[in-house]
Image 1 (tube, one colour):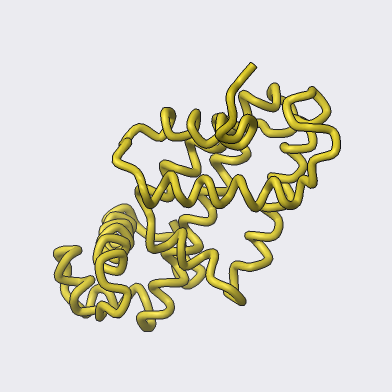
Image 2: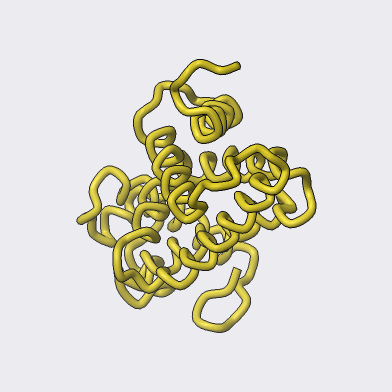
Length: 189
């Protein structure tokens, strides 16, 4: 991990990780929480937080960037360009749900309209449409389906799965999301 351009020592990296994890918990419960509240939850002095992050926004930016980096990594790990489309779609969905369930504040912040992460989110959406096009080419999505719309529906399903469920298993949630995306609520043949 690097903050402010320099690699961190192992103990400093652990402190930063603890601060980021505490920030996620605290900000998910109270988006207006102070750095002092985050420091207390991380078990570090407020000066430690200030040493690593110039201000609250710098902490939030690092938190969201860290989670966006994880999002990029889990999408790449699913091999969306080479794996069978439904396998990749399930793996991406389950991994994204894990991130949304584990980092709800950061994931929500990254999708804020006009956010500094909008370009990264646009690239992610483009990759999603490309994966959906692969699923369409194999007959899993109707040939006349609007893939941009399908991507938006897919995102909405993931959002509902992450925010409005009692099911803790991301793999089971991913199956629900994909089944609903591909088959809707109508009877299946």
